[in-house]
Length: 268
Image (cartoon, rainbow, N blue to C red; front, side, top):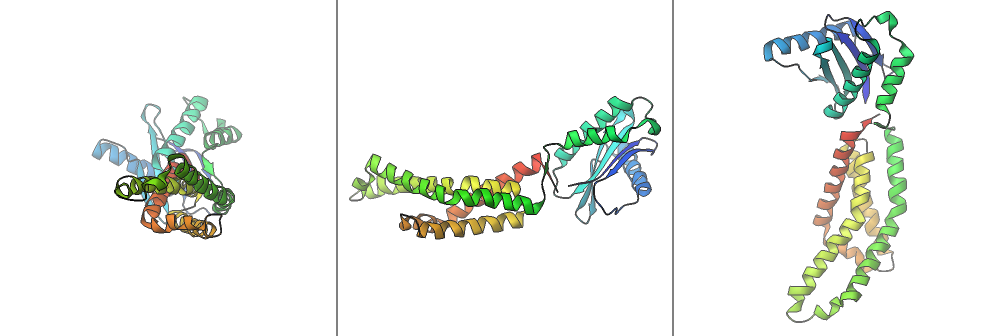
């Protein structure tokens, strides 16, 4: 979540700022001095500019410098926001600011409406809606898909059993050499069908990891219950019997969604 945005020159003069939250937690004058101090100190002492500072209370500071223009952009965001994504947005905003107001950067000539358009255009498609809406959307989509995915799992398995006549391998040496390996592959395929997309979506839209994991577990329980009331209730044992594998796959897809989301979206 983007909370505050600042554009400052090398002398510590504030050229532009925007507060995205209702409550202003920080004094702009103190922050500006802090930004320029840590940037100058790190450049002189370490030979490179500091890019990220943990501010505590679920806040962090991202700093982007334009040495050739003697400017720096700074953004205060949530701690779980992706540094590279924030830096990329900040760089684009800073570059458009330079294109519009270079070389004098006269604060009196900076047009607020133009800056607002600059910011909104760079945030477009990179901000996900509120947590409640995201959770609602994820369950609306996944809830409508659970039973169709169960039916797909059942009929795909039955079709493969019939097409390859797997029952012929139930007896003798073929039980261990052919039937069980085929059963394991089918079980793994069922788990992927049932849990890949739902968990990936939960990962993308959930506000945090705890909510994502809770949604994933609820989805797993609902799937097992619906299997028990389906046309082939015995298929519930595929999920129950492979519960460790199901949980591993579910969490893998879940965290893949979380990682995908963090690299592409800021969250309100």
